[in-house]
Structure formats: structure tokens, C-alpha cells
Length: 131
Image 1 (cartoon, helix red, strand yellow):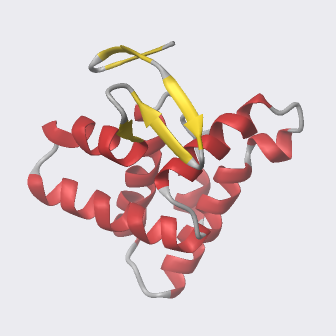
Image 2: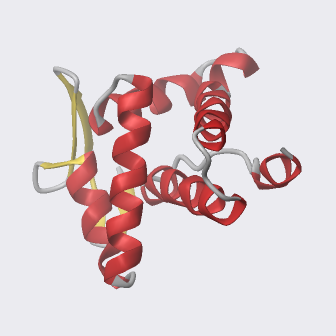
């Protein structure tokens, strides 16, 4: 049982689909939580997160399910799988020519997905600003 903005909810991991309360997918739950953000921010967050999903070749449900499994693992490298993937994705986007502030927004969009589901990434912001 987890607590979120819509009260307590159950997390079910079935058939590569993670449902979060009221049978909403991980993506639906995240988008609902972004409702307080400005429209432009929501649009950018969605675009950047979808780009990340393409980069890792997973759905949002698969990402969340994998993150939950990874954080329970005793191996620190496995626990940090998504931090490593995020750094690779940021490096990829930097090579594509994105400006440093855009890279920070990309990082924030992906971080928000994990934070809203109570599995935040370790803070890589300092490392990103030095790249």
C-alpha cells in the first residue's frame, strides 16, 4: 500500500502493466499528478519522458515495474540502473545539441515520474551540470 496525491493506493505488477489505484497506468497516474504544472511544462515533460521511454525501449509501466524491482535488489549497480540510463540519455540529448537548461528540464521530467511513484532517482543534478 502506497500513499499518493489521491490517497492510498495499491500497486499491481501484472503482464508488464503496472496499475496504480483505480486501474490507472503509471503514465496516467503521472499525468494526473502533473495537472498543477503549467501547460507548456506538462507538454515538455511528456515529450521528454516519451523520448526517454523510446531510448530505453520500455513502456512507462515497464520502467516503473523495473525500478521497483531494482530498488529491492542488494546490488548497488542494479539499484542505480535508471540513474545510469538517465545519464546516458542526457549525454545522447546533449550530443543532439540540446542546451544545458533544456537538459535540466529533461532530467526534471524523468525525475518527476519516479518521484510521483515514490521511487526517486539519486540526485544526479550536480553531475549533469558538470558535463
